[in-house]
Image 1 (cartoon, one colour):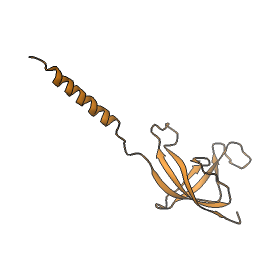
Image 2 (cartoon, rainbow, N blue to C red; image 1 turned 45 degrees about the vertical axis):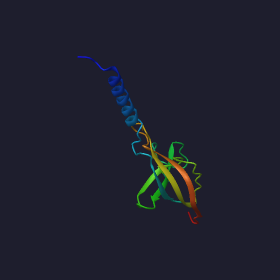
Image 3 (cartoon, one colour; image 1 turned 90 degrees about the vertical axis):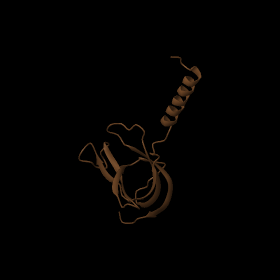
Image 4 (tube, helix red, strand yellow; image 1 turned 30 degrees about the vertical axis):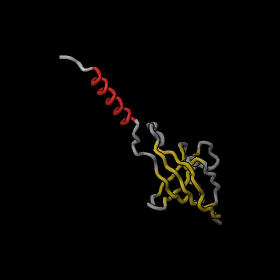
Length: 126
């Protein structure tokens, strides 16, 4: 039995090329763009109850409703990169949500980046 070296090299090159092509293919997790409504008042929470504005361990959260899905949730203040929140204003913002490639076990699974502030409306009586 003789081995045809050019055919073996060609087969090996094809296998190597196929492996590279598959390993470089995107998995479709490029993220999504959503429009969010951010409430004019922050929610208070955190690991050190009772949470209060004078407690340094307090964590403040944005109260958010997504436009398209009406999904309600909270995000820790500062989570949306590029968003300069001022309490007392109702915001409508466009945000890019991108899944993290390797999220920590107890950490966030997405990153949030501000694309555009669509509206900023002063709310009186808070």
